[in-house]
Amino acid sequence: MRVLVWNEGVHEANGSPPNIAEYYPEGMHGAIAAGLRRLLPDAEVSTATLADPEHGLSADVLDRTDVLLWWGHAAHERVQDAVVDRVERHVLGGMGLLVLHSGHFSKIFRRLLGTTCSLAWRNDGEQELVWTVKPSHPIAQGVPHPVVIPRQEMYGELFDIPDPDDLVFISSFAGGEVFRSGVTFTRGRGRIFYFSPGDQEYPVYHQPEIQQVLANGVRWAAPTTDRRDVPDVTNPPRQWLL
Image 1 (tube, rainbow, N blue to C red):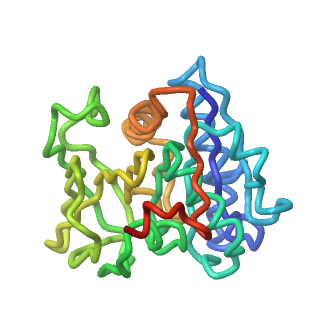
Image 2 (image 1 turned 180 degrees about the vertical axis):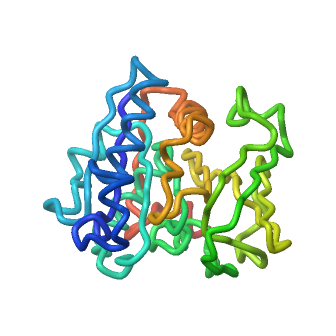
């Protein structure tokens, strides 16, 4: 299985917030990739960032990718539309996609879901509890109930997304808010998992429980066949239009 962890890398490049270098000396993508390598020893895990040629998401790279993890926050609009088109085609063709934290507002997530994907938020560094509400789902296997995140940015409802295929996790916060923090979708042949914990100001991706969720998500989203049917979304087949 070939896994690519994509991170825009803007916070790391700017050194903002100041503690990001302490928490993520190899970048958030580096921490996520390290957790996946530990839990998925048979997987080939690589990383890419916005600054790479073609954002590290060339046609050749995506052809070799089974599951793409996407972390974005401050540079959504800097992602080239041609690259978004390419990623969309591969998801529809069967590539798995995990969208993380502020990636809810990425071009690719909004396009695949067809809604604004807006939400309520504030950042007071409160405790977050991640509750499993579908323990039978493969993504929930081996995950404590609840997962305790000592400090985290708050995301709250209303989360403007379509009804998910599965609601796996719900988060609650010290201020009383709740949020659908782990949801799945299917688009074309591709499986999508959105998971919200993981703000750049806190060392969330070093938590073993969070790493377990992401590893489970990768296993679940991976294609079940070697066949990849990548449609041309700019020139769809006639039957798409009927």
